[in-house]
Length: 123
Image (cartoon, rainbow, N blue to C red; front, side, top):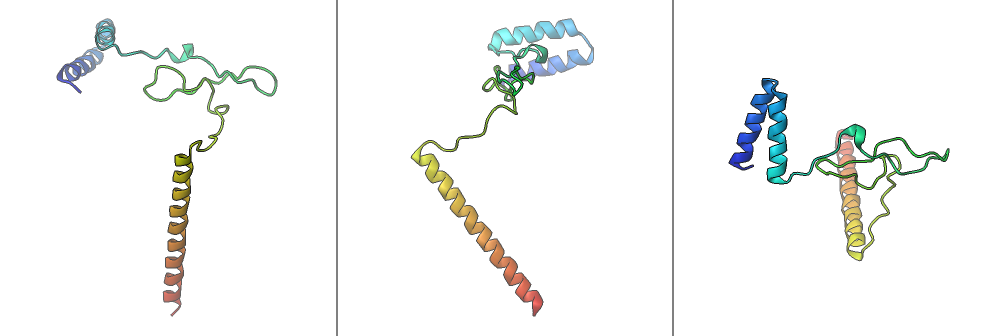
């Protein structure tokens, strides 16, 4: 964070503590214009899920927004977003296979250590 941004944030906090909302609003608008920071719409103005429910009506839930984004992730709510279709490339499939192999090895090692501990306690 640059010195200008740090000063601006400290100044904003100071103004907020005094409840000078008009000054804070002017400062925020200035920062948005100066740094070209896109703003998010108010929660009440954000788009709704574009999915159609089983009743045939549009879903009323809000679309999923990732932190820091200024637009919805894919226009669907968390319920209708859909599951991952899995890896699509050979590299992705190889990565998944390697992770599964590594996890299986960890499970095998853990089970062996638990069996050894049980054997040692039985003696």
